[in-house]
Length: 280
Ligand SMILES: C[S@@+](CC[C@H](N)C(=O)[O-])C[C@H]1O[C@@H](n2cnc3c(N)ncnc32)[C@H](O)[C@@H]1O
Image (cartoon, rainbow, N blue to C red; front, top):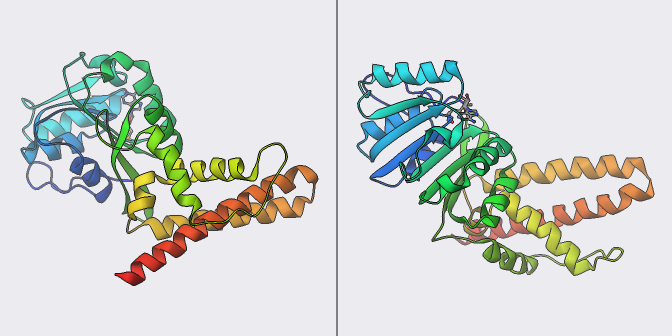
């Protein structure tokens, strides 16, 4: 994960991950980039003339100083306000309308947002690129009323990252994602039933987990990196099933059956993707 600007002061080149975050920032935004490190993102957007103003925030002294130096090197001290502080605590309510949080763990992103719920009311677009826990970020933000407006996968230096833009007004809500489970059930047939939970409830739970983790828009619309992500997850699940089967105890049998269900669903989506690609 580099996000490197190659020639400070003049040409600016952002790596694909941060470039995608920048793509989701609306023109004319009053932006706060939380966890800015070298402030590459606000510098890029300011140099492009895409944003009205920017606040670059970092909680640690080293990245804060690095941000100050980069901003000065690009001659943008009057346009980008670099602040040392914890998340939204150094942003006044109503001061910005767009937030970016990239390159941090999903739990950290949620902690930062949950710490200042009042500060989020005037935010019209929230763009995140979690390093992990992507499903939890989607689920918690949608449960708080955010809607997934756009999302995509980005490959950089052999890793695939997820970038998601939320708004309060337009996009996929928690209820929409609940309905999406039924759509994906058509791609796949039930095979197992267990205990008190009906086979249908079990399928719904597993499918919902897949949709939250992989993203409703990414799954529906496809993405150039989706096949790779599905293949990787199938491989992980297959290894997990092998381990569970080797344990040969009753407690692991139910779990192994669930993971097999997930593999079946992922394969169905992969097959549909192949069909879609073949139809083009
Ligand atoms: C890995 S860097 C990501 C830099 C840049 N956003 C990117 O995506 O390339 C994460 C940064 O978040 C900062 N950070 C972590 N917790 C923070 C918080 N609560 N408030 C502000 N910055 C924070 C860290 O100091 C670090 O500089």
